[in-house]
Length: 246
Image (cartoon, rainbow, N blue to C red; front, side, top):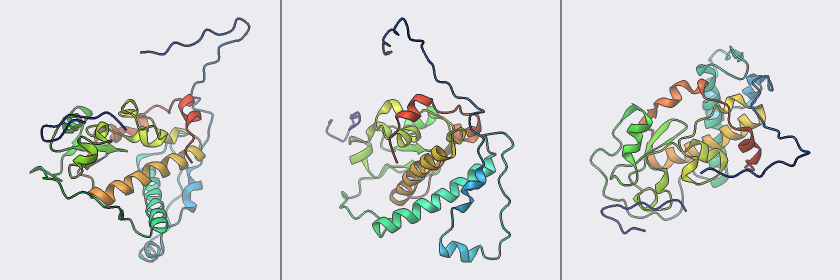
């Protein structure tokens, strides 16, 4: 459920001690090895566009193969291209699974929206994003750097079960599947992982982005952290091994 947050117009709703190692057992610390993987990002070129997208691109020249300028660190252009591919794949997968990108469940009547609802905020930092938390009429959240205005669902993001997401970036929570506040505002570069994890995590992220776009429309801004995503560290290996999502 997430932490509940008080709103004016709504009803309210350390460190971990590590066991000492056995005397005859050496302590092993897993660290990210930047040379562990030598990713060939062209393996994702098999992700095909939909029939409609193929028709519109029929006369376009074929894209050049991807060759990262550094191992496990593709350029911003390469990242953008891969993200677009996975977004198209996620959109098609959700549509094929549900028959529609629109949720069929009954939603509450539209809330009284703030005057600046859906107003573009541009590129902002974490401190600015935090001003749009669950305690405000206007609520924003970031997923993979895309900022969405979720003010129309105070029942979820205001005093509801997702109130802890408002005013934060939820990317790592989406990846791990751990719906907890301490998973927010954590930034790692998924492209510094092996191809299987890249594919899995981008699919999870893009599925959430498609869902957010479908319910709340286009992003109203961009989190500045993701302007330099290539400089994020690799995700902690122990957390990657704990991730059981498919």
